[in-house]
Length: 334
Image (cartoon, rainbow, N blue to C red; front, side, top):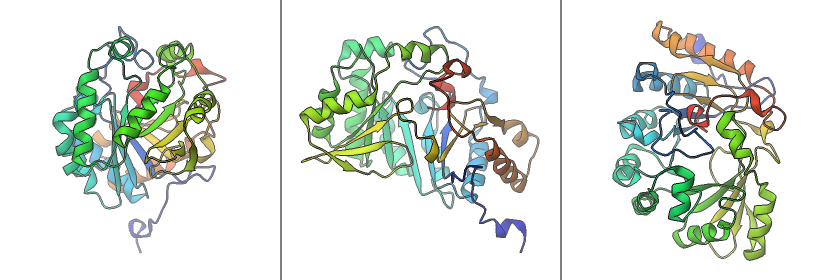
């Protein structure tokens, strides 16, 4: 039996964590300029010829799927600013072993693409939305696109994505009086809601640190209004969930700072330029694009990925060394 047939190899890192989830950034560009993600004057985008092509992405994700990866999330930047994402999605969904294909988006461009994306095999959506107030949306994102986001959500809901999760960054002094409102909005529309603590990454992240709010505060406020019943949701992420009793809305809490979840980390990130990042909060990475363009074969590509896992660190150090990561969230894919 050759090596290929015997590869019931799994991606297991030095700490015994099984990696079954790839977050795939298809662009570092975005049509919003959220203050905590990308500095206002940033124009330092990757050149298009350094983007992985769809064929190269498909090769890398196939290698991952043959090593046991089951979940792939398409992200960015804002993935829908790159042309042809439904085509890429259908190619990835067709790979044997990929049984959970999802998309993170700000939903500005979602209304026109929802049907094609769903038809291509994307089942679940995560939608970033930090406020339901038009003036605040403009203040946080730099754009007056809240109406388009809400339209995108309605179209996506009718199209049949399940679940649709709203991701709300908890920002002290910016949206900390809207948590109940957002929960009620999600109950009304059958969405789930996830609160995320800000992470100090690079210059934009340090600005976000000023608005840091531990999610224990958010949970206490929600618990004063709703009955929260411990729950679970499908997906590869680290949220701890509670269902709002009497509704089908789950509330999730993602706490990279106050209660990190590194010991159960099951994911790696592939950035738009083909760099494999082993941790969002550390600098460990392996560039795959030069290898792909130098003609690496499939077996060697798998070997490189297996070797790369040895670099996966035990945990991030956002709290202790926020300055050590200088890339923007938009580059690594969140």
